[in-house]
Length: 80
Image 1 (cartoon, helix red, strand yellow):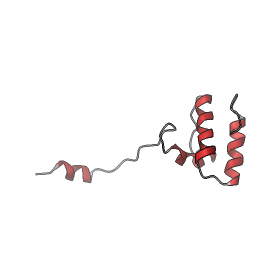
Image 2 (cartoon, rainbow, N blue to C red):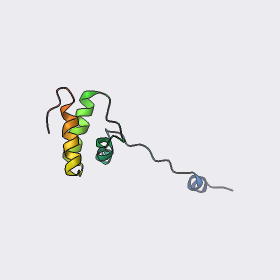
Image 3 (cartoon, rainbow, N blue to C red):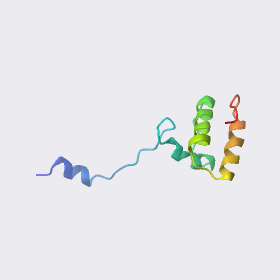
């Protein structure tokens, strides 16, 4: 008889994509800055995500400059 645990252990683990609203969203910052991840589509949410990246993500100098440039392209999004 197969137990539920045995069945669950044989199933592939699918990674859930992280949301910009999740607490680990800072992990998406470098990829978004480099263009491999999309920012939220609404300007207000994109601005909030970019500010979170500026405050929480560990970024290189180049990434910081690219992020600042992206922030300045969003209407009404102030520099961090």
